[in-house]
Image (cartoon, rainbow over all chains, first blue to last red):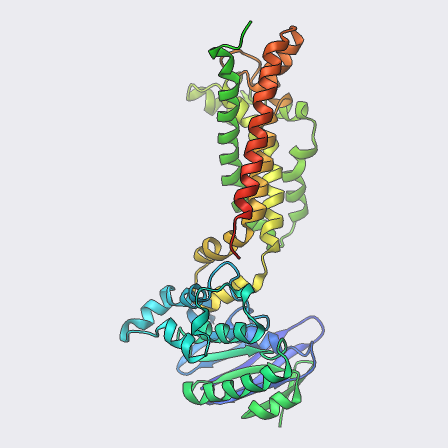
Length: 218
Length: 223
């Protein structure tokens, strides 16, 4: 369950979000400059809203009234960046291991053995690439590795920023289906940002059109 | 007169001064440049200009400022004399002079290097649960490495070649504060061409070798 009620003042307009979703895929659709990525940044804690609150399951991630603002590293929110942001100086394996080595994961992982990086890479069909560097991967491979890296720490929410913008049509259709399947498997809320109407229609359980910061539900 | 063992003194002193100066410059320059690369605050331009000033000021001006005797009645000067420390005309003064002139080179290179690191890598690390220190040492620093290497080479070269400010605050005391650039200057001055030539050869070959090695080492990355 993800609940967001917040305002964020931006240069030209004020972003106003008021939404509640269960374990669904929420697609934020709209032109560039409509504030879609800013919403993801606020959810991940990379930017701070001006007022309001954000709740994920039973945790308050942000509340202006209660002066709560959980730092990004403790939010347990997965983020797939538009350009994937794979660490260029680390192999695929070390990229996926990065999150497993953080304190947050070690704390939370006490109740289970945790996920095996090799296993999750295999399940994404990129298990044979563990020793490669990001520069040696194709666009589709990069995205699968980035997904594996974001999910291996078992986040409670996955944010996807324009996940198909760097892919050709064929790869895009394949990955769209994979993401839908992934969502059924993981049973956590996904928030996906896209400017493509077709992607929005295919993936979205809830689709919200954004214009100058004002959401409009379909 | 052939080149004797004590003639090597300026070479060892210069190396020692340059290495310690680069160490100090790195300790000061890396945190400062990281802090200023991504932060905006009131008066930042002023701070930036002040930090770069030693690069453009004539060395004699640096020497004038660094002449600790001038401050001997001030708080800092009294503290030093209470501790029984004298800086002026010791090789520590040479280190001070080299550090001040080499600092802007390290600072500028490191700042450009930190700025060139795509912020999304740091953001990605944050979403993966990493704290700021871990991000600095595992993401930012390795990605900024080539630029920092450049800063190390430049500041080392500048510290090794420091002449004017060193002469003013450390003096030219053979066997105590006489670095290579000073030794060459005073050898030529006194007509001792053999010593000058040998020192010139040593310092040229050594500097070339260091820069060559550092460049080779920085290129040897596998991504």
